[in-house]
Length: 100
Image (cartoon, rainbow, N blue to C red; front, side, top):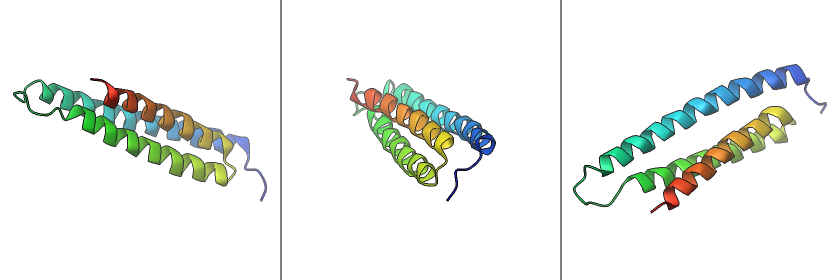
């Protein structure tokens, strides 16, 4: 199998980057709303850390499946973009889930 041309890889990488940022913003908004609701729940167990943990697993799984799949198909640029952006988002949500 030959290496795909660089032009389409860059285009796919940019498109996936924009989609990743939209998904990341949506999850960050959900975490913020959960944190806001935790402030009004009357002392019950906070829900925001659980949301952050689920978002972390969602992003880590997406990084492994899409990034790993693209790298297996020899699409190095979009695969690396997926691994970096989604993996970085997973690390951020892991740190948010671990916060007291």
